[in-house]
Each structure stands twice: as structure tokens, then as C-alpha cells.
Image (cartoon, rainbow, N blue to C red):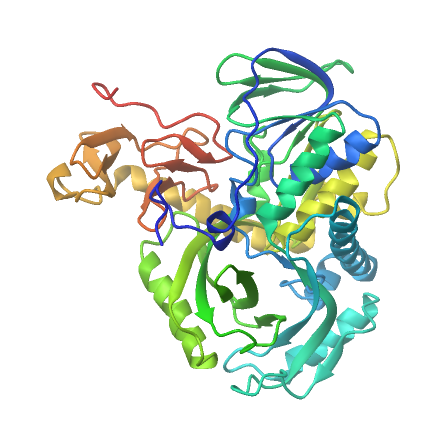
Length: 511
């Protein structure tokens, strides 16, 4: 279901309206400047304004208009990297803190929903992890033991998922998981921030960020020349836009795909479901004005490194229809960006080398709880409080156990620079159909060419403005995606997702 912008549309974008906030119109001085109005940024803002801090939130789009609005909004302490792997990487105490923090995040969301009376379809649900085709119960048994060691003592092994229409096999039941409508939740959160004195400015694209020197304030500059001076800055932009290299070597961007299929009311038990495939499938129900929608995700790949998006959506639909025979039409389809840290845990805390700049990234497929963890942990750090989760999520950490994954992902990035010497996607712009894009070689340069529906050709440099990889056309989202670090640009070259902050460079003659 394409949106007016040409990108696919999530169920959240189609079933909610978010409040509008004006762009920053004058320079400002504040205690904390937060860049990004997704779940990380707004949760941190909510916590800080209630602690008496002056807060300014900047975003280049609407509330939740970035990757937060493209989540499937599972709320879970059942982590997809498995507790036995987290324990291997971070030790028993690290696994325990991971379980504790994600549990606390779901609790915090529930608390905010109650305190602010937010109508966002929040509910507590069971979650069921079942084997993928070819897997058996041994992995479930191993994960059960690790979950218990991580203090999730109420996780249990069942002989089958409690659904009558398909035998998924044995499963682990994770009680007291949750789900909600993310944009309605963020709407309530944003209104609470504004009510308590926080200033939210949409349509304010951050072009430059400078950390304070010798204890001085940091500065954030917008594309239209406004400056915010702050004692602390929080960069909550999915992928950090303040860091040039360091953090981007420790995580990798992946696109994940989602379909929303219409189902009869009460035909599927309201719960969360995951399998053990790699990439895995994840399933939940969401209510809308017409009834119920089964939301199913999976088919992940490295951002900018696949051109078979339609086939991935088809695979998700086929997988779902085989297991959920009552599904009807596909009403929604979209994709989202997942940042996979090499050691499974998010990076939440002080940016390496800075005293007053904080980052929240590395959601690892659990963006709603990771974002909420950031909204708990970062305010405590800003307020000068010690926090028991700080070490596990420290962005400066280095893990020797993660060295193989670190090497694999960075070799993959290095390989993308070969695109400088390969042919273009097409030999002539004449081959590009209306509504489509392709990379064209012109002499020694590569051009990102998009032909709009009227037939007009728009050209931009195909070189990403972050670390200069060649971008790739994303047919499903109508975006230019960077295969190195996940920067994304709209069809005309404007930044959609960092770490890039500058649009694709114009080509001579292109206005």
C-alpha cells in the first residue's frame, strides 16, 4: 500500500495522526537538546522535564516519522539474540541485566500509559518462541535454562503453541510481554513533554553538532542556520549522526520487511509469536477501525544490498498463509531499519570521547524496549546518577568475543567500495521507467537517477555523504540506501535516515 510519498505505509502511519510542532525559529539555550523525536528521544525528554530540566527536541520530520514509526511494536524481554548467546558474550550478570532492563522498559511504558491516560491499545500478552523448520526443541531447552539463569524464572516450555489451526511444535512461553500502537503512544508522550515545558520542534534538520570543550556547552545547528546551545545533547536518531566512523564499525544496518494481513476477529489468539529462523519471523495482532490485522515481519538483509524487495514481501505472505489459513487481503506492507550491534547489546550512554553528548543506537530488533531503556538510563547519566545498567550498554565498550562478527561486518563494508568501478544499473537513463530509479555511470562518476511520474528525470550524485559509498535504489521504499552504514535518502536525495546529515550532492545542471 504505497503512501503519497511513494514509500510503503505502516499500519501505524495509516491509522493515527500525530500532533504538529513548529520548526525552530530562533536560537535557543537549554539544559538538554535531544536530536530525534522517536521513542528514545521522547522518553528521555519526558523523564528529564519531569526532573525539572529545560529540554529542546529537534527532528527533521514529524513525531515518530523515522524508524520508530516503522516498528512492529513488540514489547518484549524475550531477546532475539538468545540469552545463552548474550551470556556467552557478556557473562551471567550481563544476561541478567539485559533481561532486567528490557522487563523494566515494558513496565515503564505501561506506567507512562497509565499516568498519562494514553489511548494506544497497550496490552500485556504472552509471547511464544517456537522452532523454525528444521530446528528442534534442543535450542528451546538451552534458551529456557539461560532465561532462568537470567532471572526470568516464569518462562516455561510448552508442548505446543496454543493455536488449533497449525502445529508450530513445542515453544517457550514468555509471560507479561506487551504491544501498543506506537504513534498514539508517542502522541501522548509528546503532549506530556510539551505540557511540562519541553519544546518540540519538527521540520528542523540538524546539520552540525559540536561537543563542548573543557566542560563548556555543546552546540547543535540546524540546516536553516538556527543554533541550540545545551549543557548536554542526546543523539537519538536510530544511527548516530554525530559520529563519523567509530560507532558505525560496531554495528550494521539491516532492512526488515513487514506485511499486515486482514484476519477475522478472534480468529488468532492475541499474543506475540517468534520462530528461531535466521532471519526470524515475528508475528502479532493489531486492531484497527475495520477489525484485526496480523502483522508479520522477517526476510531481513543488509541495507542497500538486495534488490528483491517484492520477492521478500511475497515470501512473508506465503509463510503466513501456510500457517494462518484464515488470513485475507494484504492491507499494509513496509520495511524498517534495524541496527545490529556486533555483541548483541545496544549502545546507550556517553558518546566515546565526549562528556556531554549521549547516544542511543543498536536496537538489535528490540527498538521499543531499547529506546525506552535509553529514556531511563541517559537521563540518569545526565543527572549525575550511577546506574547499574550503564556498563552493559556503554558505547565505549570493546568485546574480544565479538571480534569475529566485528571483522565480518567491516569486511562486508569494505567490499561495497568496489561499486566505484562496476557498471551502472542501466546503461542509459532512457531505461528508467516513471516512478523508478537506477544508478547510472557517466564517465568516472555514478549518478543516482530518479524519473518522476510525469517523466522528468532528477539526478544526484550516487555517493553517500557519510563515508562515500555508492547508494543503491530501494524499489519498495523509493529511497536511495547506502550499503555501508545504512544512510538513506529520498528519491530526490534528501536525508531520510542517518548517519548522513547532508543530502546527496547535486549533479551539474540539476536544480
